Length: 232
Image 1: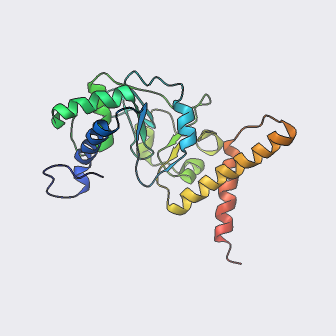
Image 2: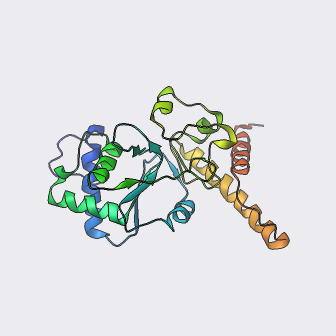
Image 3: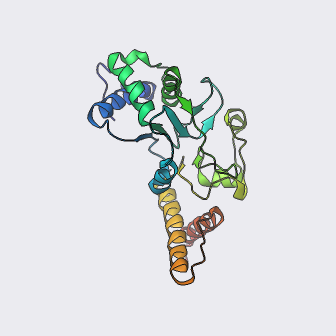
């Protein structure tokens, strides 16, 4: 993370300013990309699924995608935990404004709120990332919290889409999951890769046309967790 000019004290309350300065740096050095993604460092991200999700989305209009909250910011905002993608148009617009004056974007110290608020300030919109069954692609809590339905009360008030548990919680094409330890990240990535490898073998020999399913991902994930806990 870049250190902003004149930042005297290093603490979480300055996170918005730190990210703003990082965005300005990225805009000045790497302005040719179609999409920009901001995410917490305790999240699992499946880049392949992210790219697949974004490939037919409108990069040239100011729009963002992530886990949708319906509070605080007009028309809502995306949780910063599992991250959110900004189109080239959205990223470029607010970065240009911050180059003029960093104070052109709000700074309450809550970075995901502030960045989304700034995008809306300059006529950007919040896209939807749920799949056709209403399941989330970006998970604001850990994988098992979503699967078990261990939702804090505040989430029911904040979430744009009603939280669901069990196999209805999560998309087959999960993009990101928040609150994941290094072990959790390894486990979910292996769970997905194992399932995809099996499907590729079946497709090669039997042409079944099977696709990745969340029910198999979660089975693999729980099985791997049990293997890790087995001390025999």
